[in-house]
Amino acid sequence: MPFSPGALEHPKAEEVRAELARLVASPDPSALPHLSRLLSHPLALVRSETLDALAACGGLETVLQALADREPTLRLKAVGLLAGHAPGLGRALRNPDPDVRESAFRAVLEGRLERRPQLLLLALGDRDSRRRRQALEALVPPRSEGWREALVRGLRDEHPTVSDLSGALFHAV
Image (tube, rainbow, N blue to C red; front, side, top):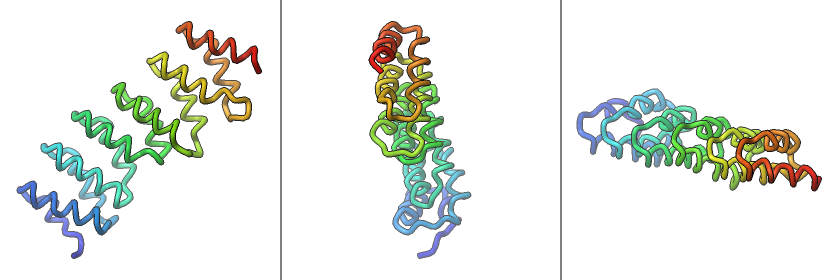
């Protein structure tokens, strides 16, 4: 069954959800402009299923909008969908929600991303000293890109555990 834009504007959430499920099963990039409007739907379930449809149809740039959703579970779901998308993870690492930043940081640590060193350097600016320390530890092997900058930034950190670790690592390499 081809994509039906009208189904996404149906007043009944069940009809909208059925069309979203069809889009997940048979992605259609022409649906992207219509899907972006559903990210402001009043029902969190519809917004959640919209994220699945956006990801299936290739709309990861639009998934970024969900990082500001009022529902915490949707913000975390967006991070999960962006796990292989470095620009999206970069935005998630700067998100005001600490859970979103933590999920994005985990995705960076666990993923095989081309821009991993740059994302870890971005995490060195996090408000949480534990996350800064973990980013520093992940960057420190002298073979990794960005390790020198990480050590210098770590030495300047106001939190003693981060600056002490940087000092010890600086002397070890």
